[in-house]
Amino acid sequence: MTLRIVLVEPREAGNVGAAARVMKNFGFEDLWIAGEHPQLHPLAGWWASGADDVVERAHFTPALFDAIKDAHVTVATTSLRGRTLEAGLGPFDVARLNASLQRDQVLALVFGREDHGLTQEEVALCQHTAAIPTNPNFPTMNLAQAVGAFCFAASTIERAPRERALPAAEQLERMHERIQSLLVEVGFLHANNPDRIYDELRAIITRADLDEREATILLGIVRQMEWALSASRDRR
Image (tube, rainbow, N blue to C red):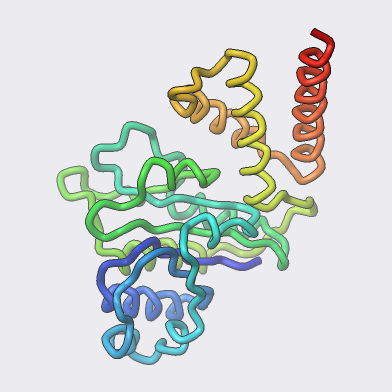
């Protein structure tokens, strides 16, 4: 199993270095940075304080999806402040998910910008949401502290892998795009705002916890329905 830490558009190089340091404290070194970021050197190395190798080996991608598309479980972290959707997981829930993965499977844990976190669209790209149960009167945490809380939890849970093949996020997102397009075509979703209802359908599909074969079957059903609709139009 691999726990991948993804930082989306971090604003401060020092926070990247401090996040790398706390990752290494708990035995995790797979750091990804998505989107724009500040010049990391030398400040990130100073804050990394011995974990500068984690910063040096970080992967950089232009957007969040590029950083998670090959992951088998994706989790968006968020503050509890001002949320309209309930965060389903806490740090130890994420740790148990991570412990259930096989050695070649990846859990991508996504952290947003220091000033305003992840966008609604970025959260929707992930299968799960998670938050740290903090003081409701002072809920937001420093980026590196939040990374540390999840890494600590993950380091305390023993591996208990489940023998099942999981679809990568890229396959799931392709399935969601096809389902949403189909539902727009048949009039179930409004073309001008399909996400309003489809976000709830995403949540339903996530709760189904599809394995790779189940996701392939569902995508096959969608393809057959697309073919049937196309054939019906051609007969008119």
